Length: 73
Image (cartoon, rainbow, N blue to C red; front, side, top):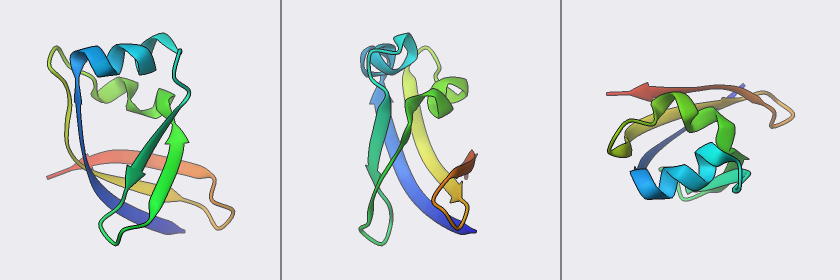
């Protein structure tokens, strides 16, 4: 299993494209500088009235398949 930590900040307007499904993937740069892309559907539970903001941990399996995304403080 692989873990990646990153900060994500999206306004409510930016989240609408993800939430409505017109954007399929989110691309982030994790703390060590690696670019990672994952399905946008996984941020839906973190969207609030102001958007998404915080530090996250992304877990992938050995085949780079999604396991979990969680907000960490």
